[in-house]
Length: 291
Image (cartoon, rainbow, N blue to C red; front, side, top):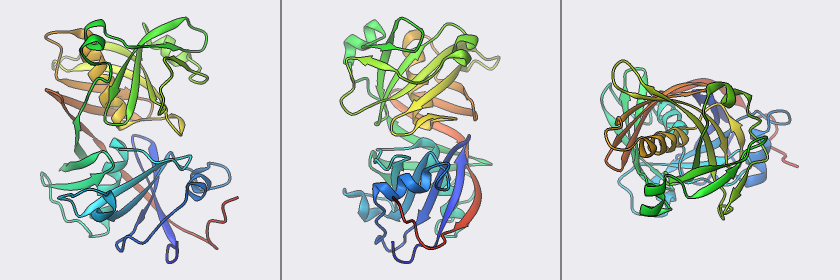
């Protein structure tokens, strides 16, 4: 971590991150330090940590110049972060490392593959790649492939969606039930071997302009409950669309505690649109000194 003297704080629909730019590709931050910085009492506080590094760090041939090295708040690595990649591109623009006018795009390498990101006025649109249903055609036909035990409720059916990080989506009947839910101590049958993000959703029908709508809370793998999850919004829209059947909308409005995101599904391809906010540059005093 020699030479790292500052981090940037930003968020996408209140899913917040600490970010560092590493043009040389030499920065290596261990899991304990990430967890220390992301701790909301001992550290600076964030849902995740992002290093912008040369694309050679991605570990595969890439058309990108930059790699998003994403870590969860506990220091574990993750394949992709839909909110985080928008904030990362906003930072690269602000620092002059990437020049983008409205409507232009940049490709960023992630552990889930290359992702193209467009500037759309005050928002950013991310090509999130193809979704898959790990349960295959049988899960698509039944609408579920896992049983989820939420606190205070009987087991409920859940549908697994890979974006490519793992998600499990469960529906409730009302917004009141969603808001009252204690989102902790969740159990899965079968248990996901690599963990999972959990999206608990309430379908809201269609908006006046024909978009599908849903409200969602999320329990993120390696973090806990967060105010938003970009890949989770995509997984939730995919699941609700699968449940709705033929004729369901391709465009979705997803409401999360931290704001609203747009999701478009084109075949198996998913696009996410939302804001990116840069808040502050934080000077590091004396190094991380993680316990």
